[in-house]
Length: 445
Image (tube, rainbow, N blue to C red; front, side, top):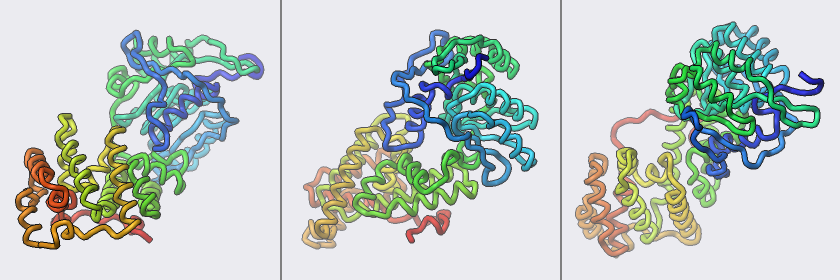
């Protein structure tokens, strides 16, 4: 290696940080547009995806690789760029904690020598490797040395050819024989390795997780409830927890604008669970449940026009023909809060939900919304008649077809009557069956 140069597989050169930033933004931060993830195209070899970094961002003079003992003392969390000395620090931590059996890897890559040295430690100690989010370039050299190699279903592993940087920071292509040997020794299919090492340093091959298993890169796909949450490995603080909560439930920003203080207790509960070792699946379920309650409270006293718009939005969601419709119907049976906080809302659905919440909270702040009976002259008998006509109870026992009919019947009426009939559909009574209690930190202060 030339004096002053560094051999790297993504991470040390400027283009790497641009890609890593896009990946991190897409996975964690709600303020970033998911479309900012680099353009992808099919790899000519048919192995996976190529991601091109069109606008590289200069790498900062990096912080040391973050290496911490996990909350249960049985795993180590490694995150960030693989910088000089990372392997030595990992060795010291492993020497001090002999019960460690697994290492969580969340890294944009970095120095090849460090990735290889970390891999050697992993193999020597017989550790399981696990990628909950992303492991790019030099990070993959560490990952493939695991006794067992596990990834989340939506994890991203990125591969490309190695390079060196000269003293001026220019990338120089180098012989990829050492990397090829390392991948093949780990039992990875030769055609996969060939395809990965043909990728230019400013590109990435990002196969889906099924392909990773078939090619022998990963040995299995881990469910979100199998291991303690790794989402905050690169920064376990209240602001990061808040960012993760908003990423999972983007519409909470509209609730927070009208009801300040909504997000803080949810983020505190999430952070506490991370520190205690709560699995990610349980954490996400708890966040969504609390978010659904907050959204429901924000909408329950909305004006008739807003309730009708909310009803239309819900009906449109349960009418959509998609593989996830059963889940949408299940959310609708839980009420409007669950519908608006369900996962994978597209941009149109997010915009509609945000507009509804903004209107409801804005009007409520300006003046007290009319009581539900006011639109019908306060006639309880008339209210009961409309609810029966809309078929509003019992909502929890209904299938998708029954839900569609009930919402359609309510929405066929004039605005005031429709709002009254929709209310029990949008805000059903709490279930009589007991549900697991959330921890005390989830409650508002």
